[in-house]
Amino acid sequence: MAELMKNYLFLYGTLLPEHVSPDLKSVVQRLRRLGSATIAGRLFDLGEYPALVLDTSAETRVTGEVFELPDDPGVLQSLDAYEEFDPNDPDGSLFLRKRMPIELRDGRRILAWVYIYNRDPSHSPLVSGGNYSEWKAASHTARRWDE
Image 1 (cartoon, rainbow, N blue to C red):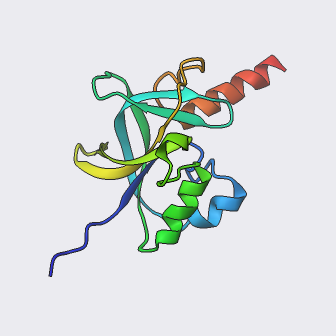
Image 2: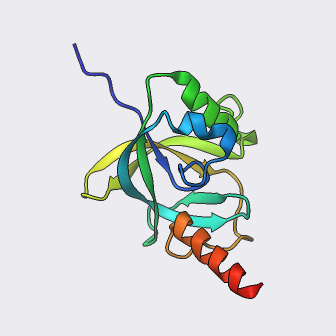
């Protein structure tokens, strides 16, 4: 009997455990962290959340964490609802969920679900360095100094 393919999820923004909203905390706690990873693309700061735009030719990479999904379709459904992804209406969805190759810190590549922004973010600031957590920490520090 063939081993079932594991489902992985690449998180880079407000679904990361340190940024997740209280109403989704119990869902995210069900994910099993595998480690840091990156994906080719650009990350934009939309204010309340970041937006990943894939770009396989980009020299920039977006940094995030990879998690193994539990064998419970309700987890992914909850995350889809949060990301405003409707598999029956991809054009109307704010984010799309696609299985994409990501690179783990040790250089291995695996396929993982990734939420990709489904609008034009070009009027939003680019997250330099592609790391949302570092970007948020730096912008929080800058705001504190401005006060």
